[in-house]
Length: 581
Image 1: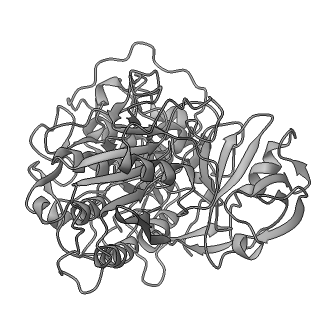
Image 2 (image 1 turned 180 degrees about the horizontal axis):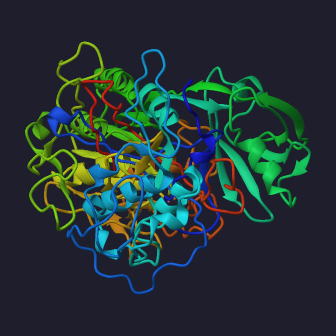
């Protein structure tokens, strides 16, 4: 029987400020960039976080180095600060190994949780982008359980800060491997099919529905964009103190859980009672593409929420329809897209830019100073990745991608703090070849970093291993991309555009604030004015959940989901070792 470990999940550390979070009614996904290994493409995750045990750290660690002093290998340890064995010594040596069954084969060997910690320590020293900023701690202090191993992993990060004061690395996370594969590769997760935006996670709390998946429990219960959650399983969400009940109801840990809610629908005065039972949800990563007719030509609107494999066919079909409509401008809505496969970012960027991008550099990777010329994960020479011009998962495979013939070589992008990783790579990649990106909404999350997700003993670990830069070498946006009139433009990477707050009115309607501002900007670039978002507005920065399970504390904590994309442990020849942003 396959071992499961739902308590081994930690969530996304995707931003910095206080109370606004975008979270799914299930374990959130992480942001990323991915490409088939043979093509040198990559994927990126929007980061994770987790709880950490308050054991003392070594305040004066010895500098990290590559020496290999005598040390007991797998099965026991003699910790020597600053000295590391090769990570391969400890790989797949597990305190609780998985059992092979049916067509599932696992490389796990019986070892110890201490071995798992030593693997993390060596692997981080070899590949972590800021390896020399990690405080070296004895893994034996955390070798009591699988949860202890994750607690130890959460220590293996830099403590440095970005220019705005945010943690430099807020993208360190783990997820149960089986769940990770299902979400990223198949577009399947468990929950209600509602995406909750936590406007305020502290009293007085405010949680609103941002998206609803078709044919989901949330849709069957009549939830819609803008619905407010008032009560969860008899507990007052706004002022109640029982956050365990609130989180357990909002974010069920498994399929088949029934929970009861009081909700307030948009435009009505009386709340109503509903119940929802969690189920497997099929993600629709491209839920909307429409044509808006204006006096100055047709405008295409494309809502893209997830860089997952099923998105490729949906994007190809949507761009084909927009191209056939001869649109003059594109509005790309990435406000809830926290990342995923990088190759999809390179494909969509090409479909937007058109044939002029063919053969040009989409992005390049920069690893730590131990690996200036070679990728430490794949062993390949480091080189640039090009804009992707053909299909890989969409039918027919290997066919030329459709493109838009945009006369002004520009794209309007709608963003929030949940816009992360591979979504930011679209922005940066297009900017790198001179396509004008005009930003409407709030600052993005700020994730120019990525990693190769790595399974060990049933948990997928994601640690920052590279920085992604565009064709002109730019990748310096750790505080995100910000509209030029926003209060964050001074510390973020500034783009032309307007800061605009969400109001959770229907998407794809010309009057919706972010889309309305994009349409107005087409006729008058001076239309922005000054709209500074208040600290607890719908446009405020979301933070990241810091717990070993997704349900444990998006309320009164922090959290934005990202997108994970996983190599399948050798079970797929097409998608081995996919890096993520």
